Length: 518
Image (cartoon, rainbow, N blue to C red):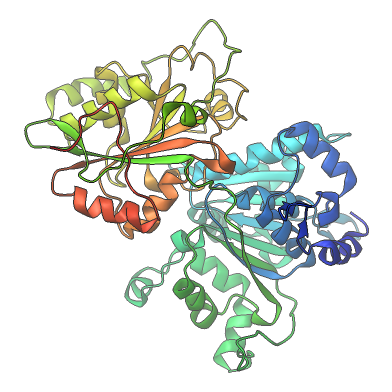
């Protein structure tokens, strides 16, 4: 798109916060941030509810267009990923000349995400905007996904036929293609690399790195090899005494790294140990946290006692009046009279096995989740289990209790599109027959499902518990919508879980369908 960098300069000049008569922030328009006018019209047709940029989008979009390396942090639900997509779609398309003098399009942006469903979510966003463009270009020329499915890689054949403007991929799928079909990627032509949820994809423990570097690190080492060599020769500029970053840009791809839990310690590790970022052309963007409105998301903690009784945690405070929490429910009046989802897709060949073997889950905890779901969920909820827990087994046990449960899988075309649809777009029959999705913590990170009102967490999060909880809880309350997070733990774990909830600045509130602590 011509005039892109002129628009960037203009956007940067306008980007200073504007205050209204009452001192509140007045958001800039998308065109003022440097987005193409035709693109903005398509955005408004595709997402009519997106009327203006969020605070973090105001900051990051001009920097994306300007080509600077970016370290981006903001709360979950603030619009980080959506802002990245908008900015990247407006970057100039890379075109090279082949040996015959012809023009050939190549990948402009490599967008690395931690799991398959997040890749599919980003693709769905791009698809909606692309469909709204006039004229509408083929989706595969704009964006494609490269993910592992079963024993193979989905998207490879399409990639070999047509190079997209943006390639969204998981690390291992990208590594597989790099090792076997390197020419399909042409990494040397990529102009922007995005690593979403970077603290999930890059290991910082030296002992673990030595044993297994990981696919993301390996790919970044390849793309930024020139910068790594310069670092080993002590040619990279250091921060000056004031902590400002000096130096000059180089010709390597723009690198954008983002996470809601990007700590100062991890950021410093990226800068001082990894040497991928160009410290001479780097900006650190931190949002204003407007995505999470305090008090809109309730956090509850249920304790399962050895005798099977379930009570609220000791010290839980009273919840706000019910009338003040009506935003928890996302109602949809436009329902299809038929709900075509079958309960028979939960690996029927395993039902006999499940019936004969002991469950890895506490049956009282599963029953508590089923009860809470039945009494409090209007449409869609999510239950998150441990990384090694059998998701299909949890689906089976919830269905045995009469719950309309299924494993979260955005590859299932119709259901996947429905779960990512905007609030009010309608998932067939969910108001009449609410649905409980089951997933592990690793496979929900970054997902935005507008109709999701509740998250149930079984057990204390693994690893860095506070960071893990922040990401899990961040699936609700996105863009200021309401929601509820209910943690269910065994007696003896409640003290630790309370500290985790306190660690994100929250205090457990009573879940009124269960007894008070006694």
